[in-house]
Amino acid sequence: MSYTYRDNTDEVLDALERAKKRGLTAIGMTAEAHAKKVLTKEVYTGDKDWPLTGRLRNSITFAISGEPANISSYSGDHGEVGGSYSGTAPKEKDDAVYIGTNVEYAPGIELGTHRSKGAVHFLQKGVTEPIDKFKELMEDSMKNA
Image (cartoon, rainbow, N blue to C red; front, side, top):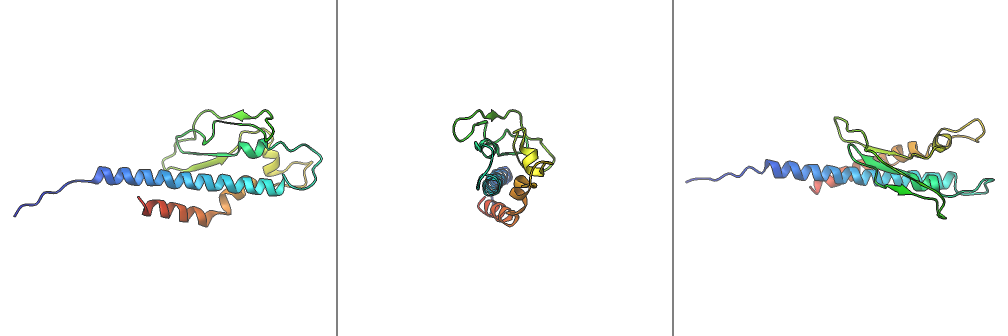
């Protein structure tokens, strides 16, 4: 009796790599959405004495290690001048998801300033509050590889 074996290692590794990228993308989308939700709730609601254009909220995006940002450009809710992204996220030993914004006044909102009532920590909350969801997203992605 003879047996023929086929080595599927490359196909399995490729499927796992695609599943990891799907999981990281799902995590990035979830972190981005949560950061936008926090920012909207904490900053874009209530009476403000400055115009709220949506530029900061619309600029929040994510990138996976070694890849460009999920969006390439953004603007305010009413067509106000926005911005664009170029370059790629750092490629680390292990793949990661980066969330952020390149709007110049974002650190003042995230960390607070001497004139603000306090820090909002919308980016920090975007990556820490849904941590259980991130684990679930990656597990589901790998199971469906």
